[in-house]
Each structure stands twice: as C-alpha cells, then as structure tokens.
Image (cartoon, rainbow, N blue to C red; front, side):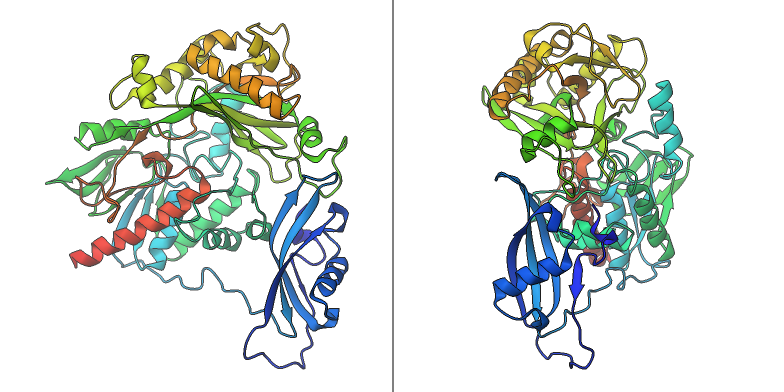
Length: 546
C-alpha cells in the first residue's frame, strides 16, 4: 500500500478560498485507530476526527497524518494514526528542503571518501553550509553496479570495488533501505526524511513508524542526490579508490587515488562504510591510532512470510492493506545478547562478500515487500574480551575473527557463492539436513553442518537463543526455516577515534572519521545524521583557519 497512490495521499484538505489567511494557526493533534479496510477512506477518517473533536466536519479545514503505525496486539490488527487537525484554519505550506542550497563551485573544498549515506548527506550538508564537496567513491555509479551484482549472484564473481557493500549509495542501496533508528538525539531525523522525499522517495516515509524505501526504489533516489550535489557545484568521482591519506606534522594535507591523482586538502571526511578493511590497513601504516571494538556475528534465518504474518497478525491469510509483517526478537545467553538484526519482511537473501574467497550474506526487500519469504540476521554479540580468550588479540582481533569465519564457510563449499545452510531444528539438534527448504537466495544453498562450521561458542549461543525465542514466538524454531551462513557484516569491527568536540581524530587534524566504517553509526539514518554533523565540524575548522 502506498498512500501517494491513494485518492487523497496522506493529506486531506477542506478549503474555502473565501476564508482569509489566519493570523495564528489553530491545530489540534489527536490519535485514532482504524481497521485496515478503513485506512484509505478519507471520509471515514474525517468523520472520526469530527466525532473525537466534537465539532462539525466542515470546521476541519485541513488534516494531516503525522504518524502511522500498526498495532497487532488485539484480535485484529489496527492502524494507529496521529493526526494534526486544523480547525477553521489552513495548514501552512511545507518548506522546500532544497530551497536553501547555493552554488559552491568556488567555495572552500572538503574531501569526502565514500558515497554511501554518510558521504552523500555530508555532501548536501556541505553545500548548504557553503562548502564544495568532492566525493571520492571506489566503486561505480548506482546503475553500473547492477552488472557486478549480477556477476556475484549468478556467477560467483566478486568485484572488490563494486558489490553489495561498495559503490554509489553504499551497502544500503541494494540491501533494503530501512529507515529506522534509535539515534533521535543525534540530529533531526525528519530533515533527513524530507531530503529523501525531495529526491523521489514516497511521502509515506515521513509518517511511518518503521519507514522503508526498497532496493528497487533507492537507485533513482541516490542518482537524484548525486545530481543535486553536481548541480550546485559539488563533484562525485567514481572509480576513485583512495590509496593514501597524506599526513604531515599530524595534519591532513591531501589524498592520493589508485589512478595516481593527488588532491590537496586540509579536511577529509572518512565515510567508507563498515567493510572497507583496506582503510584500516592504510591508517595503521600511517601510525593513526584505532581500536578494536565489539560487534555481532551469526547467520540469516529464513521463514515463509505467511508464517510470520500468522504469528504477528493472528490471521491465517494476511488482510488486505496490511504490509508483510516484521518482527524483532532478542534474548540473553550467558549475559550475551542474541537477537534479530536487519529483518527483511517479504525479502530476499543476497550475497554480500567484498572479496573473493569469503561467504557473507545479507538481506534486502523491494518496496512492495512481496517475496514469499522473510529473512533476518540472527546474531550474537561478541566482545573483544571474549575474543582474546579464543586467541584473537590486538587491533585486528574482531576483524580477523570475522574474516576467519567468512573464509571457513567459503572453503567448506564448492568455491562458488552457494551458501551453507541447515534447517533450523536440525541446526539446534546438531544434525545435517538431508534436504533444505526453498529459498530466495539466488546463488543457491548447500546442506552443511552449520553446527560444526561456526565457531563453537557462537553456535552454542545461537542454538540456545533459538530455543529461548521459540518459547516466546511458538514455531519460530522449525524445520520449515533455513539457517544460512554467515551474517557477519553487522557493524565495523574497528573504531577510528575522534574528539567529542571537534569530531577530528585526536592525533590528526583535518581527519574526520564518520559513519558506520568509523564506528559511529548503524544504518542509513544514523549514518546520514553523522555525515551532516561531521561536515558542520569541518566548517568550524575551516572557518578557524581563515
């Protein structure tokens, strides 16, 4: 369901042009609940508003849904709507989120490494602040990335610079586009959503409790953001793999790319994403301090979407106007978290390796979320302290562990991107499955002893976690579900430190670690917010140097 395609979008207006403009807006915010078959009925909603406000419907000149969520706790799911009603007044016109942009061709430059959400939102923020962003992306433009995704899906060929993680738009472009975050204190989430709408996203994301764009819609939005950056004088340079960040006397002086291009600069925003392992190696070679950090690792679990719908909605067949149901589960095993991650209702499992010789899976959904499958990461938190007990120490403790698991699962297979898998109940019972369920994973699955391939302590926690969660969601642990390995790119295994006040690396002036790759974000929205915040600190530095 898309409210933009309904007969009233998500705004309904009653307007008499003879009424004068109000000197003061009279607005009341109320909440109502409607059944799924009433969600598109503007006249019904207006009647509910009229009844709840105890005024005539003609006195409600404008109304707007500002929040929409699904409540499935009762016998029948309902939509809960938070609505702004304008009583005998008109709703003020919305602001154009791009109206403040100015041309920055000849303005001070800031180098942004990475064209993911942190990098692109940093670029647009730079333009708003009067800076010229030059964005260097190791991969290809979003449309050209499709060829490399096809190569890994169908032929098992991994391009280390263009894949599900690298390229324009970053990892989020072709792996779902979920727009949910708990980082509300870090910045204005609504402004991020409005910028996405200004570049072509459906207005639904402004009101949904768990907004989602879809991997089929995101490429055009990402392209539109690039066009905005270039229209106002910024630059986006593809196939620009950064091989050196030049540092003299503990301050950034420039960057060097694989094509030998050298760009002088005093400000570098490092927004390279959670899988750019070469950046960590580069920084270490330059003597830049970093630190190992906790992360999470596990598997993908794939159910039939109809099963998740039944569990979440208490309906044998999902009612019209209800989206594919999502879920979030979590438990504790020996004081360690075991939880779902990046749940994709009506989605697909995709290969997310960034180098040959490794097996990594991720999840995605298209905008309609109409796949017959649902999938979710099912992972356990892993601490640096725990890794030390298993022989992994130093800066690369978590990264080396991550790599070892990915490579072990790859080596156990036939050299392709076929993923090792096991039916869920067999996984818990330690039995290799004689057959596997149907799957959304295009490269295919092979029946594997996942209980032996995964590190023992990881397997034990996932096993007990599945048993405990099945007590909360009966049937979750079933042989009708597949366990697919491995979900290992949940977050960066290394953090690049930065000063809390300036956002610069404490030892390198002009180096601004940013987003997921630096350990300061965990998704599209939080990365976008961090990108904007970092660029504001860049402006402070450049202004101080004038």
